[in-house]
Amino acid sequence: MNAASTPNAYGARADLKDPPAIRAALTHKEAVAEVYRLTPQLREYDEFMYLGVRWLPYTMFFHLRNYRSDVINTDELGFRFTDSHRGRASMADFPDDVPVNLLIGGSTALGTGTTCDSATTASKLAKLTGEIWLNLGGRGYNATQELILFLMHQHRFKEIKNVVLLSGANTLTLEGLPDELACEHGRYYYSYEFNHYMEAYNDDIKRRRNSYGSKVDGSGKWLFARASEHLKKAFNDVNHSEKVINDGAVDINERVERAAWVTSNALRQWQLLLAPYGARLSYFLQPISRWTKDKFHGDEEDMFHAIDYCPNNFWRLFGNLCASELHAPYANGIAAGCADIGVPFWDMNALLRTSPVIHNNIYVDHLHFNDEGYGEMARLIHQAVSPTQELAV
Image (cartoon, rainbow, N blue to C red; front, side, top):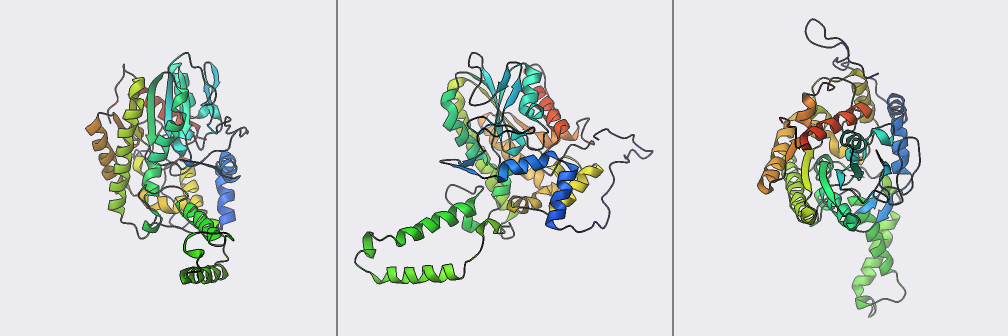
């Protein structure tokens, strides 16, 4: 399925053809069916995510605990398992007699798209190094949430050798949320839902039988608030989980600058948290499909087409980011932040561009990979962080 074809006389490859000028439009149901036909394991990831979100303090949400399937499995804390030479390891249960390594990021670090836990980048790194690598990927997390997730579990570690951040796309995507969903702490997954449902609690407070403040003395503003509340409910009989959000009103240049700053600021905090361990911190800008190559395998193009017809709000916010001209400003912004504080920076887009597998079918969507793609990222990360090898970015 992923085998490369022989280059033709012009150096082009038969399986790397431009998409047809006209592709058939798909209904949402047809598009989802096509996605599952092309990459059956994605059905399990959708099941994993949409069975229900586990709400947590500080990070907002995380994966289901003790999830079991042939594709993805989590421990009692919601972290995905890693296969290692010492058996299955995760945040809830790992050997503490040796230094551990941490792979941190969003759904790409988690390994969305792999066919099993042993095919994730963390598992492949464990195999390449003969060391323990824990998967701290959090689906949908931005740079700040990645940091807080570690902070919540920092007490579990005795020795940490490497911390690899494979990140960047979620922060850039979520900085595309409209200004009305932003706050002094940034923009994050479920920004709309958090504001909507917590405001509903504020409305509940106004209906309390025994209250405080101006409601006790019958001030007129409470009567107006009650009337407004009834009117709002009368005209608001909608399913708010179907709210459509896009980035149409967000300036793309400001968005890139914000995301680079958020990432750089988080890296400074990472340094402070890791100082007691003497761990090596490395940052890898995660790859985006059209930032890594111009020509795609036919199956990749088929997947991109199907996904266009069944987007959720995340993909609506992400869509414009595939533009290749955004790559350099974002990468350079983060690279400059890393240079300021002495954190090694690697652009996985650039590393993959010269990879021997780049022309194969490795993407399952614009952000995630199949087993071959994740295995190649593990190889590139291993070469980059190994003290005996160097890679040119």
